[in-house]
Image 1 (cartoon, one colour):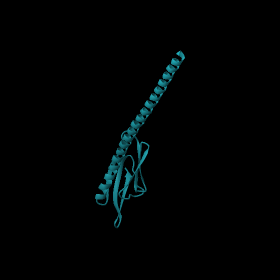
Image 2 (tube, rainbow, N blue to C red):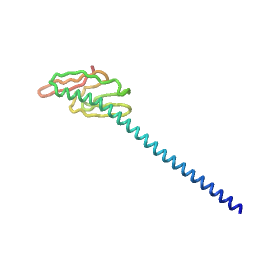
Image 3 (cartoon, rainbow, N blue to C red):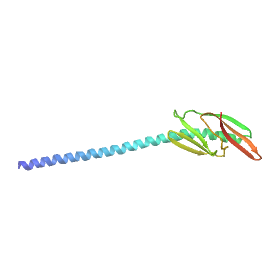
Image 4 (cartoon, rainbow, N blue to C red):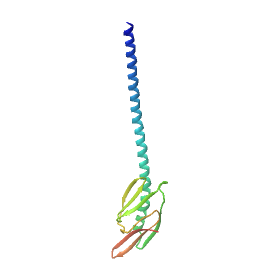
Length: 147
């Protein structure tokens, strides 16, 4: 009889141990899912902030283009692009006079100009110049140059 009660006691202890292990495993799974979810939201928020910062830079350049379009021929204006965006370095360039490329925090952002620019145009950090000149009858050429 004593042997039977000892078996029951051991059986109850082993059942409690298994339930405890299952509970701990469940809690770890829940903790992992919550942690991954929070981390994803943080990364998404940083991506939105980075995108907004690059969009502000793009808006400076596109505003200069809109101003140049509305001005008469032989227009020229100097404008400044910051050396750092939100404390980080970036690269900026023009491809084939039709697209603006910005490399910032490991990502590449591409924007298409509303008008074509001279293919030899280029932008740099710091002072730049935008020009609008007449090159022939009914032909106007826009270009960016580093000052």
